[in-house]
Image (cartoon, rainbow, N blue to C red; front, side, top):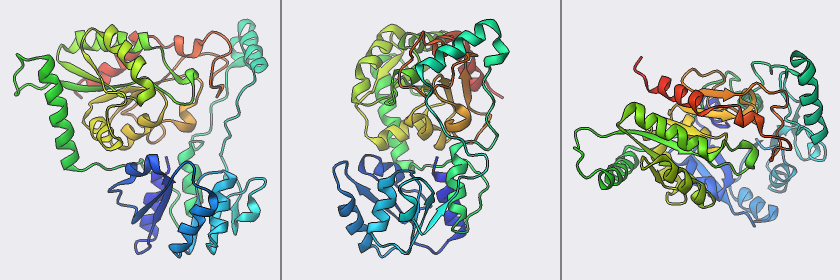
Length: 361
C-alpha cells in the first residue's frame, strides 16, 4: 500500500536517490522496483542504533517515515537526517522536524471490545438498521495516508494502483515449475493445452478472525474444477500454513498442489503473477497479487476492505466479499462469538465471483 506514494515521489523527484528501509524478510519484494534506487534491509534483532549508523553512512537529506511507530521516528532522529517527515503521534512528534497532522478522511482501526461486539449483536436482533455500520469515506483507504505524507515532499496526492515488479526470466522459471508439476499429475496431457492456473492463500498471520474456513476453500476449488475441467490450483503460504494447505489439497480431490513453505518470496511473486485469479484471505500475498496485476477474490471478516483492501479502492477486477453482520469490522485477532462474518460468506458465492473473473468479457 506504500507503492503509490513511492511512485509519486519518483515522479516529483526524478533525479533523487530514493532508498527504502525495510525488514529483511521483505527486501526481495522491492527488487526491480522502478521507483527505488536502493533497498536497506534490517534484521529483527537489530537495534535502532545499528540501523541509525547505517543510515548516517548514506548521508540522506530527508526521511519520509511511513510507519506510525515510535521506533521508526527514533531511528531517523538518531541518524541525524536533517528533514524528518511523518505523522504526528504522542511520544514521537518531537523526533520529527515536520510532524504531519492526520489528513481529512483518515480513519483509525480501533479493535472492538467483546462487550461492544455483543452489544451490536443484541441491537441488530431487535432493529437491524440501528446496528448497521457507517460506510467509511471514499478516501479512507490507507493508500491515501501514505500519499498525504509524500505530498510534503512535493508529490501528487492523487491515487494510482500499487505496483510491484517481476522479470520475464522469473516468469519463465515459474511457468516451467508450474508445467512440470502439472505434467506429473496429468501424464497424458498435451503441452498445447496447459490448464488455467489459479491460486489459493488460506493463511493470515494476524489471527484466525481473518481466515475463511479451510473447508470452504476446498469446496470452491472443487466447484471451479468441475466448472472448468481444465484448471490447476496452487496453495500458497508460509511454513506455518503447510498443514492447512495440505488439508485443503486433500479435501479438494487432487486439483490443488500444496506449495506452503516451498517458495522463495520472488518465486511466490512470479507464480502469483501467472495466476488468472487468486482466492485469498486479507493478508500480505493478497496485496502482492493485486500489485502484480492479478485479480483477487477476498472474503473479508474482521477487517475492512474500505481501509485496507487490495489495489485501488473499488477497483473492478477484484471481488471483495462481506457478510452483512453488525459486529464487522471488529479488527480482533479472534472472534469472541460465532464467526458469523466469515461463515456468512458461502462457497457458492465465492465460486460465482471467481467464475465472473474467469469468464471472457
